[in-house]
Length: 171
Image 1 (tube, rainbow, N blue to C red):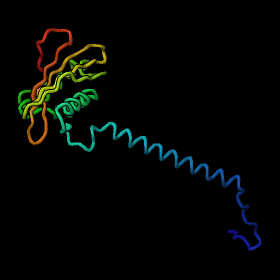
Image 2 (cartoon, rainbow, N blue to C red):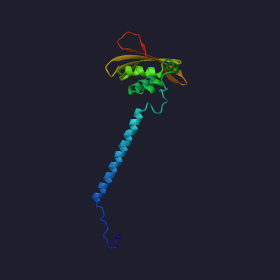
Image 3 (cartoon, helix red, strand yellow):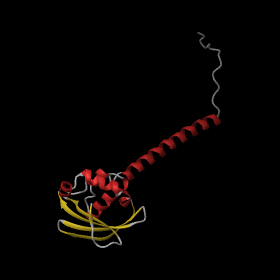
Image 4 (spheres, rainbow, N blue to C red):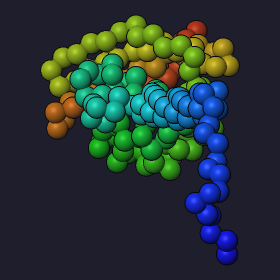
């Protein structure tokens, strides 16, 4: 092995242009990593349902309804089902709920949501929502909620086409 002698030439010093180029590459890599981290964090926070609020929105019956409709819109049936009261879940098992949601999927994919009625009396509340589905159909959903364990739960749900008679069908 040849060892460098004391008289061997040292590698040339990088020019100012090369130093700037190297610094620019490092800066671009840092910006790219920072941008990707920001995008991923933002996407995660937007994707999560009110990450700092307990499941179900908790603060008002309309927030619970909105949380359920948003979960249905994302196809998160388990999260939507968890917002029902214990009484409702004992009457409608998850498998029946899942089957209904799958067979009527277009109905639950909403483009627009507007609350037309929001009444609260003690431990019960009624929320009526008008929805525009992605297929262009208009629906009215009537949610009955109950307060238990310090939060609101959906206890009954009736849907109908907006122009049909007032007979609501249970889901």
